[in-house]
Image (cartoon, rainbow over all chains, first blue to last red; front, side, top):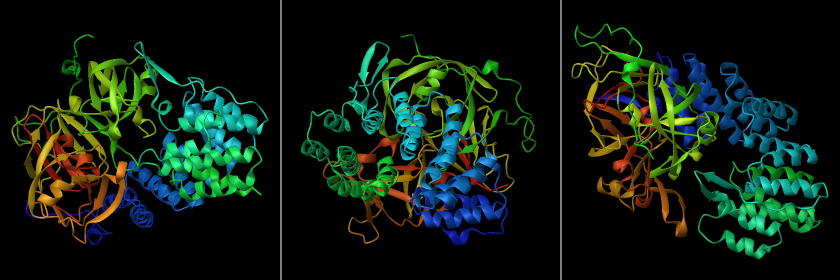
Length: 281
Length: 304
């Protein structure tokens, strides 16, 4: 074959009217999404969808990806609409239902989010991450007892660290005592293995909640290696929650603001910090 | 631990599809199975499989070594993982230390018995139940038609070179090295310099080591070389962007290929080469991989 040229990102090469144009446009959109260039991704996914020649699988991913791009651009209503379009093509796709639930949460539509989570839970009754999400949503709705119950479901096989932290927050909200942290272990063919999360981060936060470590020691643990971007924001968030629940709102607020601004976009702590700041005086 | 047996039982193959009309008599391709592709949000692809009677979706990973599955799927089929004598590197740098024997594992009409499937906790949340790797795929010719959304498995026994059934137009035939792990390496030309690249449908993006980039003329002080990210202790892991102009497989050229440059510690030699072509580039092609012939037949994705 002589010099067949493919248009990778050479967008001028993509002829909108050509047969199969939608597929080429979709590839450009996916590539932009993978590069975290969300505005560009939306432009090209718009074109891919408008081309009208995508097969159902490709249409599904075009809507999902545009929804993800809208989510990252803080446009949850548009994101939810795209996820709904994707679900019209593949109604049972749990990944898309989960994404739409997140979009509904961001769009302050907790009832719709809860419906999606309930649907997901039916499809995957043993998936603890769905129960965890449900707990966060109950927390936002102010249903602390329900939140506590949901978080406790996630602790059935041992104390996954983040579940334990949220379970304690729900207990504190209800004026209950903290429970003991019971490290999660996996029994694999007779080997008793501690889960990774129980031997490293966020164990310092667990220790802080249990009164075994002070704030300075937690921040020192954050600095132990170079990969501390997420850890620092988590430390700020969970210590701010602790302080707020113990009445020290003045100290909590700036830490929560730091968590909101510094946590990576896909961290639940970023979203929850934003939510908590709306409630703090 | 009993001996590892990974033989797909071809004797159980149901009658194959009819021979392709375009092939001359005696050179007919025998299509064992054809599956619809489902596309993940990042462009990678998965196909339906059945593990011990349970339907599942497995990502196609030519850069993998062994099939993997989630712990959830292992639980669903009531299999307790066993510790593995041979550990494997998994998705995102995870270490795979346990596996199960799948009593039956079907890809379309093909069914195998006593297949090893490693447990990879990191694939939870990816929207798939597992991954397919060359340990299974390498027993067949693998035809990936990204644009039309099908993956077909063909018999590797056919007349040499007589495989391009989907187009009467031109195609290229690229010789490939097949490593003992099943990884596929092909010669490619990046901005005029020929290097070896590993084809990895399990990688979202294409990546090149900095040492390879330097060897093909990317100067460390080039204003076009942009540091995008650094992390790890003292920021020793670095990611760069660089505006490569072309990537060519024989006469088939991808313009402005998006190839991320990584510091050597992150990539050096991984998958057997310093350049990995991910699905972002591969999706623009129709690939027919003949492991037995050690050749790959390629057209643009939309060729017909």
